[in-house]
Amino acid sequence: MVAATAQAAQTDSITVTIPVPQFQSEADFAEWLNNNPGLWSDGQYSGFELMQHGWLAAGSPEFGSTDISDVAVFTEGPQSVANIDGLAQYFFEGPFAGEYYLTNCPDAHDGFGRLFFLGTDFTKSRRDDYGDALSGLWDMLRDGSPVRKTDRAGVGTKGTRKYQGIVGRFWVAFR
Image 1 (cartoon, helix red, strand yellow):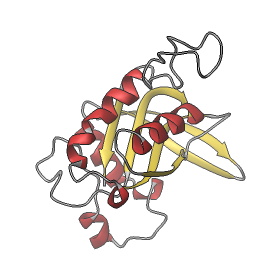
Image 2: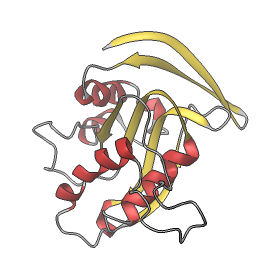
Image 3: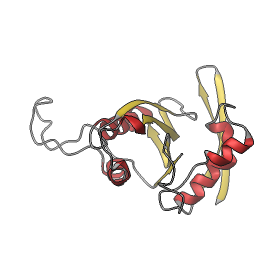
Image 4: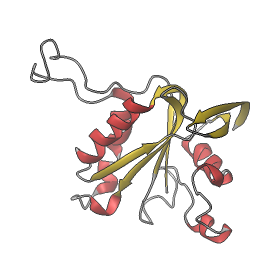
């Protein structure tokens, strides 16, 4: 991983500064999250607990050996928080068959950001094979919601997507 310049964002009355890293893999992204717990832990974990509840890439040997409670996404360029929130809700309440809460974006500025924490409860999914369902998350984030087959959402909406996919590269980690 190679660190680039720092980026500051104003969210309500709190300024959050997030270094703009460049990742070679999702394992690099997970390692970066583990090395920067202030971005996601709110001080709720001790050092030992951070090790037990660390971030993992989907391809890591430990992936699937523990319950998953969080999903993080980092994008190459700024993305609309509302669009990422919509994609996450569409996936977690649709193909994943579970519950979705919200998207937290600590570096949001004017409705755009690069680091997203997707709030869902994996224990609420009606699926018992949620690990298999997660493979669809990358497709949904990359391609967007499915193409509409009718004009039910309004005239001229046939052939469009409710939510667009992420523009550029992105990395996903789980905890």
